[in-house]
Every structure is written in structure tokens, then in C-alpha cells.
Image (cartoon, rainbow, N blue to C red; front, side):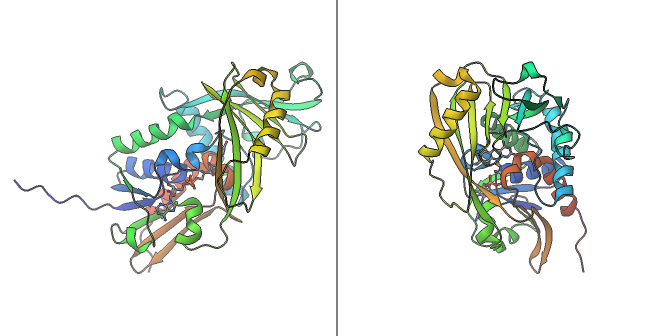
Length: 326
Ligand SMILES: Cc1cc2nc3c(=O)[nH]c(=O)nc-3n(C[C@H](O)[C@H](O)[C@H](O)COP(=O)(O)OP(=O)(O)OC[C@H]3O[C@@H](n4cnc5c(N)ncnc54)[C@H](O)[C@@H]3O)c2cc1C
């Protein structure tokens, strides 16, 4: 018997970063025949190099940022009970220059079990801080888990760079543009700008708590432990369009993190993870109806793509389901 032709996709998601993959999982789970087209291997995207912590920091529009972070928190808390998802709930300590209690932004107040740190919980030399719990997302395990979810729900992945959105629109009536920094050329959108971000990755000497030092607001550092390794971060350079690791900045971060967590002094440095964040004045979530079909734009999540991911994915799915306009 002749093999039937492959069924046409109903949605093509361009991009296999955390935004594209999460959106594809949500769409595929809801019954849409979904394909993901990506220029890069999903294990090689900036998302795959994320530290990655659910971090309630504001991105414009603020109310959207709040709603999406809350939705993701709910999903990640559920995933922390799913074996192999790579998601765990960890203790967190943010060191602050002064006592912040009483005037915390709504986003910060989303953090589970948030309270002021007691004096004896602060490292030497620090006078104020916040304690909370938060989801930690080990991208080395989470990206494969998302791909597995996509596969089990019937979604397909295809490694293909697209030059224009007309290409995926020829394959499906709806296209989700989750191309991150790629949206600069693909949309095209000149308001998308790169922000260089970098983390030093070391062996884990037994740490299980996230520590963030914000006492110098221009040079914060963070210690993010996963099962076998620790990500030490704090580097952001706006407009730097070069993914090569910066060794000078890495030495400074390593020194400051070792002061914060002395157990790191003998930890072997494994690598430096650097990537370009897709920054934009506002995160874009918008329908564009073209003659060839509908595009839902979903990019510009800057340093908060993991934090926004589940909220953004459900918001995109709601737009994909909207009947076509006039
Ligand atoms: C070092 C580092 C640490 C981070 N830590 C955190 C953290 O702790 N918490 C947090 O919330 N966020 C964190 N982030 C930020 C987060 O990773 C980003 O917000 C997120 O990666 C954005 O995801 P994205 O899916 O939009 O884009 P990307 O991950 O950049 O993926 C873009 C996708 O689009 C594809 N693409 C682009 N152009 C084309 C084209 N023309 N054709 C086909 N495919 C195309 C690419 O191949 C890729 O698959 C971190 C990022 C870095 C780099």
C-alpha cells in the first residue's frame, strides 16, 4: 500500500529556545498539529545556556510580567514533583543594601515563603536580606524533558533556518515567531537588541542554596547550584553582539562569588556559558494577520525568558485559538 502523505502542520513554531519549545508543548498538548523549526540544535540555544532560576524581576509590560511569572511559578512547582524534569525547589537568599521589608514590589512578593533573613542567616559583612524558596531549572535536563513532552504529544522538531516568515506560512496557516534575537532580521524588528550575559560554571562542592548579592546594584552576583555544578553569574553588557566568553569579567565574578560562598574556593571551573539575551523595550505578544496566514509574535523576553515561559506559552496559545479577523 502506498504511504499516505504526511499530515500538514496546523502550527509552525519558529524557534526551539525556552519560549518556542514551551509554546509548542502547550499547543501540541491542546491538540494542535505542531512543528518546531529551529536554526540551532535545541541544546545549543541561549536558553539552553541559562543558569536558570525562576526570577521575579520586572520586564515591560509590568502586569504581563507579573501574570506570566505567576503562571510559570505554578507550572514549575508542579514540575518539581515530576522525575527527570530537571526542576527542583531550592532555598534562596538575596542580600540587600538595606532592610527592604514593607516596600517590596508585587513581583518579589510572588516568591514562595518570602520573609526577612534573620541576622544569623546572613554571611559576615552583610546587614539585610530576604529568604524565600524558588524553582531551579536545570536546563541540561529540562530541555530534553521539553523535547520528550513535545514528542509524546505528537509535536515534531525540524532543524531549519528560515529566511522569511513566508516559508513556514507556506507549511501551516499559523506561525508562532519565537525566534528570540533572530526576530531582528526575521520579523524584521529593529527594536530587538542583544544583551551579553555570562555565567562561570564550576563543580558543585555541596551547595544547594541560591545566593544573590544585590548590595552593589550595578554589579550584582549570584550563585546558582544545580545537582552536579554551580553557575556563578552577574554579567550583563547591553548592546554587545558577541557571544564569546569574557575571561576578565569571569575572573571578577569568580572572585566575588568565592567571597560569598567560601566552599567554592577549591571548586574546579568547568566552562564559561555566555549568550545573547533578546532584549526589547517590551516583550512582544501580538497577532499579525498576513495574506498568507497568521503570525503570533512571541519574543523579546531579555533576561527573563525561563521565568516568563509558561505564562507566555499559554498567552500565545490563547491567540492561536482566536478565529481569524476580517
Ligand atoms: C547565561 C544566561 C543565563 C540566563 N539565566 C536565566 C535565568 O536564570 N532565568 C531566566 O528566566 N532567564 C535566564 N536567561 C534568559 C533566557 O535564557 C532568555 O530570556 C531566553 O533564552 C529567551 O528564549 P527564546 O526562546 O526567546 O530565545 P532563544 O533561546 O535565543 O532561542 C531562539 C530560537 O530561535 C531560533 N531562530 C532564530 N532565528 C531563526 C531563523 N531565522 N530560523 C529558524 N530558527 C531561528 C534559534 O535557532 C533558537 O532555536 C539566561 C540567559 C543566558 C544566556
